[in-house]
Every structure is written in structure tokens, then in C-alpha cells.
Length: 150
Length: 455
Image (cartoon, each protein chain N blue to C red):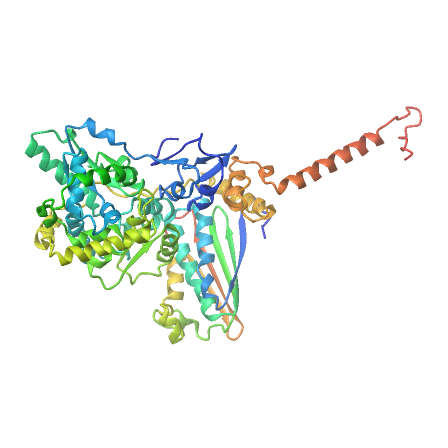
């Protein structure tokens, strides 16, 4: 879907839970979009890492998720809305090293408990809300015209 | 635009627009216009995939002809270990070196010992390094270009230790000029190359430094004459030449050869451009931080799979393994002196002259707002395309075609699937036009009403 505002780009991406073979494709596509429109490489790196972690969270824990990318000349905004188990204790989940990953996931190199902290670290603005048993909503913003963070 | 040197040229006469090159190109650098293939220089990374796939040999690698030798007063052949992979244990390296001298080179130098030294230097660098991992080998010029163009975020992870061919050429120039009393410019050092990509690293080094090599001659070009010259080489050609062959370094011809010499816990050997792209995507997402070193070759199985080699890649891979076994059996155990390497490493002997810089592709527009708008247009155009990547428009995929349209390099109607709808649109317009002209027919000035056509 494409928004009507002519200087904004909006795209939706569906992420399926448990689909490890396609995991990472959304973040690669987003990286390519950012490269094409000439975003500063340093911002692309931060965005790619954050999107990848967010994408992996859906693949590992949720049933499915919808990622919405919005780009304006001022900022990159990402909203990831998933249907899944949600997070019982967000403060705990934000701690480095905390993970609910299964043994199998860890075997595959995931679930080091760095996901959410890493997303927060890389984004300029980070919002998270969750209803246990229903799902999680993560919103990320990356500013394009400022040097430092918010 | 001649900003970038490339080691490939398309022979417009031979090309008949079969599009095989366009489809195989990993960076979508080829378009077919008016039935002929052409390069987008900015996108090409000189991998040579197109050379192998062209049914008409219309893509010509720009390596040096043998005649280049006459420009120098003293010439040295520097064969890639890939050359030995063509012959294996049947013709040992000492015989090949003699054969090269019989062909007209004043001297021939085997690279394997330098390869071994560079392996140790890389080991030193790895042990000191504290930045983001994994570190990536620069042995393959195509991989370096791929990173400059598509993965600028990985530039810092390229190992700034020069390649054995450059280290050896620099040393040879210095020694020979002293020994022979010649200027360094009078000494021509020629790399015998398994791929055209080495040519770009000579003519336009990625780190913007200088190359100590004076040219590159294709293994495919030299194979025939060398085979003939080898017949004249006596069976018992000097074993002394064999003493300097380092079996550790010989492994550089194939994927995994460097990893094996480094004795690292976590290293990875990757070959084939599409597999490299997958691995680089993973690195960029921060997935492979536990890997220390990556050895990546654009050609399948490493340099043995180069587009300018003669032997089948699997055969030559095997031949190198057998050669190493044979040399081991023959007690050829030349090995670089680790202490000497460490000493020279500290003196910065192995480091590249310049620095690698990113070379990102031009964005859709310099102005961000305009670029966003163009990206949207691209998305809209793409949505209207069949998405079957038929290539008839002259672009490899519908997505690249949409980009070409946005950039003004193609018309939407170049898409064969847009043609019927365009015709339909035109005929609709035409019939509307006919209708409207019909309704405009004779208007009587006194009634003020248009006369309706009877039928």
C-alpha cells in the first residue's frame, strides 16, 4: 500500500512466526530501500540491526507480525505489530542477557537475550507495549536530520 | 563515464543479445539495448560470471597480451597458485617455472612461500584486532569491490594486509633492480591470473594505492604455449626450485586454503558470489560475530574456479590437493620463518599502501524528498508489471526495470506486457475521440442544439 503524501514512502511487510528460512528477508529489503534513496550509511546500519532483531523476535516467538515502514525526509519510522504471547514483564525483557528462548533456538545461535536491548540501543526513539497472550507492539524512529539522539 | 576501470569488454559485433549475461549478473549491471548487451560501469564488480556464461564469447577479459613483455628490459612471471592447479602432481611447480622461462620470461617466481608469509601476517593482525568481527580477506578483488559497492558497512572489516602477489612483486622489484642495476620501471612483473578481476586490482587498486605488478596474463592464454614449452623441459629439472615451494601457501589456490593455514577456531571459507552475498547479509545483521575470519572467493571453490582457467573446477581442486600431498611425500617443507614475519609485520611490511573507501551506488536522487518520491514511483510501476522477470525489456528483473523507468532510462511501454494495455488504452482514446467528434457534427446555428447522430 502506498500513502498519498507525495514525499512519504509507506510499505507493509508481513512476517510469519516460525518461518526461519525466510527470516532476515524483510530487514534486507528495508536496507536496500534505504540504500536506494541515499540514507546515510551509519543510519542504515543501525536501522538494519534493529529491524533484524525485531523481525527475529516475531519469527521466534509470535504467530505473525505486520511491519510498517514509513519514510519521510525527516525520519524513518517502523511499527511492528505482532500476534503472539506478548511480554509479561517488559522491564525484565529489556535487560541484557534475559531470554525466554528455547534450547533449540540457542543452539541455532539465537536467544542471547540481546534482542530488545539491541533494538533500543540502535533506535533514536523506542516504544514498546504488550498485552500478554495477545501480542506486542514495537515502534522505532530514526531521525535523518539530526546528529545526536533525541 | 570512465570513472571505474573494468577488466571486461563487450564485443558488440559478437554479441547477439541472448541475455544470459544479464540474467547471471549478481549486481544487475547489464542491460540489453537494441539487441546488444551493455555494462553499467558503476554497478559492475568484475566477477566474470558473464564471461563464463556468454554463448558467443562476446565478453572479453582485458588481460595483457604476451607481447607486453617486450616493453621491459627484465621480465618476471608470477604464477597464481591456480596455475599449478591446472597441472597437479603430473607436472611439478619447478618444471612449470622452467617452462615459463623457456617461454620468454627472464625469471619465474613461485608465490607459495609469500602466500605462507601473508597467512602468518594475517594471523598477527587477527591476534591484535579488537574491532567488529568477522575480519574478511582481501585476496579476491571482486569481494573487495562487492563490499565497497553493496556492503559499505563492512569496509572496516577488510584486512589491510596486502595480497601475496603484491608483496612478492614489491620485493622482487626492489631486489632485481639492485641486483641487475636496472630501474624498477624497467622490470616487468606479470601475474599469471585465473580471473580478469586481478586486472582491476592492478590498474585501479581498491585502496587507491599503487600496484607493484605491471600486468596480468590469462592462464587460459598461456596454457597452450606453456604445455608446448614443457615438452622441452627435461624431466629432472632442478629440484632446487622445488625446495622453495611452500605447501601451506599452495592452498591459497582454493577456497579454505587460508583458513587451513591460520589454525583458527572460528573461520569460514565461502565461495561463489551468491553464497557470499548471503553470508555478507548475515554479517551485516550482526549474526556472525562469533566468527573471526572469513575467506571469500567470488569464483566457485576459489581461484581454481576462475573464468580464465582451463581445467574443470573440481578436477583442479583435486589436483591442488594431490599436488600438496605429493610435495609432502617428497619432503618439500619450505615454511616461512614466523619470527622473521613477525619482525617485518611490526615494520608494517605487509600492510596495504592506502585505505579502502566505500563506493556506494548513486541513490535514486541526491535530494532525499525526491528520492523518496522516485522510490514510490518505482513501487507503483513495479506493481503494474508482471513480475516474471522475463527480461524482454532488456533489464534483468521487473524491479530493475521499474528503477530504469524512474531514472528515465527506459519507458514503461518497453515492457511487452504493458504493450497490449497500451494498445487498448490508445484504442479506447481513439474511440472516445471518434465519439466526441461525432457528437460535434453539424450544429445548426439557429437551434443551438447539437444534432444527435441517428445510428
